[in-house]
Length: 543
Ligand code: G6Q
Image 1 (cartoon, rainbow, N blue to C red):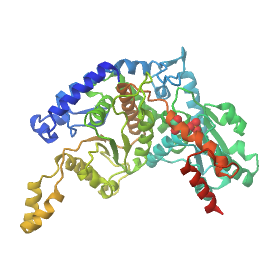
Image 2 (cartoon, rainbow, N blue to C red):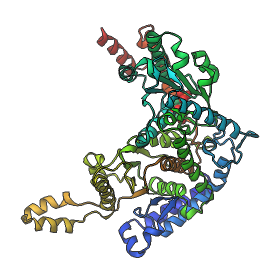
Image 3 (cartoon, protein in one colour):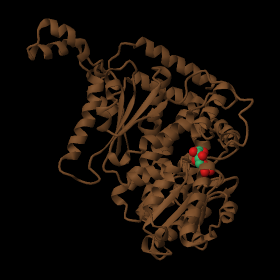
Image 4 (tube, helix red, strand yellow):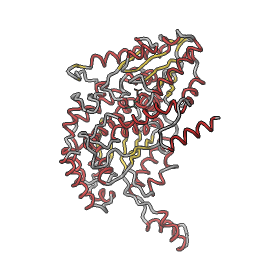
């Protein structure tokens, strides 16, 4: 963190210490308009952070932190296509992929929009032809699409296809990612080779998991239909178009993107093809449109109502000032059941860093542990800890005003649960109330003494709520882009590179070294005792 920002963070810490006993509920008593003041809109989407323990003074200090950390200048550099991914010397311009404004986007002196639009149009032509049956397999119209990819080439399409389930009118989609053969095996059991399209999604086209799964799928298809099926029933999404053609994929079925699109930011690119086939090109455009609206909001909206900026600052307050380690994402929207997993990669791979832009070790915490599950399921599992555990867990609640699909009064019950949880977490229940409730039930004084401590809820536990009209393609695009820009702002304040991921390399290297050892082709010599012991036990158990 740069010096000026560190000074500002210290001011925030002093402010926190001076208000250590502040109750969020009392902030509502001080300001009857708190909900209006501590919420903001991005289009129709409402972001409410009034249930966080943030006063006007706290907020002012947080805005000053953003200013001290040069967030506006860094945002301008991001959108200008500067090479802000400094360890890989790359621009970060996934926003160009959803640029619906007609304005040019310059990277390295070149307008990238003609290429972006050409790929998007080619994808749309292909997707619509697959949907209509004009492009078909040996057995006729494609009934199933199998996307083979991992990490950024999997989580986005999986999450978004699930999220937009009610609009899914294309072929059935399946996603294979894990190197564990069980993943592809289970899919190959249920699809018909003659009517299945395989999409190999890999930016580099070298990833072990994806290439292993792609080769297994290729062999399975060739065994069933012969070599000629490959050209008809495989497509590829990659920046390495030389490698896709070497695999046998026809050039007009290989959709490209560029090194300025990070893997975990690539759902907007050709990597979105399986989603486009599922929901159609028009809805895919709406998805891009929602994200583009957020890009504009992020650049043009004043700080006080700038949703991604507010999300980031609230997160900084919790992580750096209050010292909370984790951040829960709790969608009260079953269609968003993979959204927490998606955000785990977006946030933790981007901001799970301990070295700053100058190569020095950071002097403060960076990205929190992100986790979550949909409500109401989580209520019957881990919410106990959120309400009464020793850790305070800031949480985002997400809920639509209207269900994507209506079933009786399910949605009203779902919403009541979401609002009830955030209220319970903030308001809590003190000992006096717990005692009087037990007394009303006729318990003896001795039993009340015994039970009351367990019935106390400390309250004052922070939550933010996202309320949106309905989970459409546009709204999903908004939600994803809001979190992307939140991650950007936090990385900017922490002065880290949110766009590289060196931390995933070491394990990959060692897996490469260990493969011949695991296969029994090499002795496990020269390694630590635990690994040697495990490999030997592995071999012994397989005999
Ligand atoms: C994302 C990461 C990583 C990547 C996968 C797949 O930001 O870089 O999750 O997406 O490792 O890589 P390929 O697309 O190159 O196969």
